[in-house]
Image (cartoon, rainbow, N blue to C red; front, side):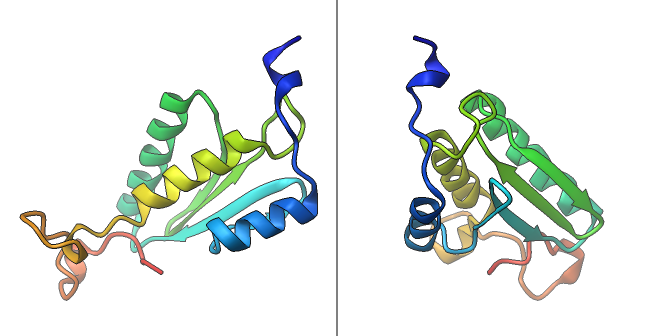
Length: 126
């Protein structure tokens, strides 16, 4: 039995419920789980794309990405399984944790980007 054949594909109702519970900024549409990240500039957009790319390559599970000057949309669906599986939810959670990370809010030595200086603006956190 192939690896893809073993993967559980979730129903639309299960996907929506799990997104509401675990990934409230993500949505289900046309067979994909999706999230749009707003950025402040092309430089920030490229950093988000590279972050998503790194996480996806390390996980060996690859999203579809669409981007413009001030946003990146990430879409996940397990192509081999032809639906949304645990791989999609797990990669979405990792992407969410890394892209939305704000070190300045955690305390410690890492301050994070200056919130009052737009020259250093990065992701529009939500």
